[in-house]
Image (cartoon, rainbow, N blue to C red; front, side):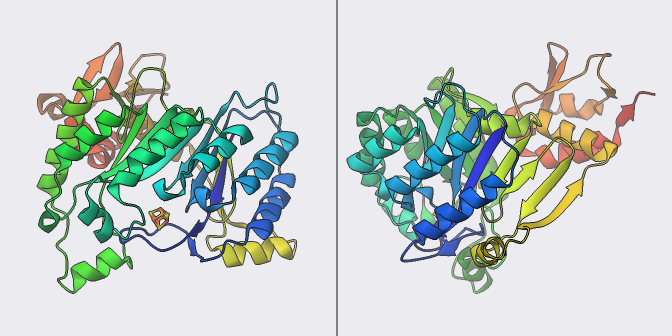
Amino acid sequence: MHLYIHVPFCQRRCSYCDFSIAVRKRIPTGEYVETILTEAARIPPSNLETIYLGGGTPSLLPSDAIRILLHELSKRFRIPNSAFRIEVTLEANPEDVTPDNARAWHAAGVNRVSLGAQSFDDNVLKWMHRSHDAARIGVAVQALRGAGIDNISLDLIFGLPEELHRDWERDLETAHALRTTHLSLYGLTVEPRTPLDRWISRGAASAPADERYAEEYLLAHRRLKADGYQFYEVSNAARDGFRSQHNSAYWSGKAYVGLGPAAHSFDGTTRRWNLRAWEGYRRAMAEGRSVVESEETLTEEQREIEAIYLGLRTIEGLPLAAASPRRLSPPPHFAAQGWVEVRDGRLKCTPEGWLRLDSLVNELTMHTEIQQ
Ligand code: SF4
């Protein structure tokens, strides 16, 4: 089982973010930890393969709360060898990574940190409403390494509006110079009701352009490949041996359990998700009610389509073997346009294919023949 814990608290809302967060000056730490552990007690124990603390901003939790959470969860679920040799990831904002915090996280069992860097341009970071500056990112990386956490991922956002004059290549070079093990690259999207959405509506910002998105995405592929990273998923690149095991479980359709507001769980056929807002989730737990907002059981057809989507988003691609329960016959123009290739009996997206993944999957699933 793969365990996700959603920590919903942030100190402010970033301009592009529509995640389920609770903006708080003071984090209700005790209540949060108790509520998560109460929810965990409702779940039958099983072996844990990975733990991921995501948010929101998990690094806003005091390090002692992180220690208690991981300790109690390791008692509740079975972790081989009690020493956390499984992958334990903490999402952190650079400004929270002090040498003391990093040492305490490491002692608590955290062995991988995903840093919300986003850019190395101070003007861009201000525009995003981030609370760190560019210099802080390198300081955070050094503090983590000093504490013994070498498996570090950086999140970066590309495809920003023209008027910001963001130098994407320079940001990629700066990220490379930090020599982290992993990079996650996300194209900016405009989500409804975010500050960015409002700025665009009133003409204070321009919408991200598709051409810029495509250029920067393909540039990242070229640069990172030359720098020794492998794109193993549409948005993720890693050095050898440093793929995210937790996220890889999602992409291979494995079971996972989510704790906390808005967290999702999946048992292979049914997906459940918790109440989205911290207040509603907290109240339901305090009153002993279910925190599951809704659930869906995937039909055979939905599972087929999901398997195609998940397969194509990874570098492994989709098996085309006759032994497969489905036989895929991609339209000839997919390969002619350079969007896919067949290698080792598997259909794989090229970087150009990953740029248009959703439309490829839509078209492909119309061409899927299910063998009888
Ligand atoms: S820190 Fe992350 S979760 Fe919080 S508002 Fe910013 S982008 Fe959203």
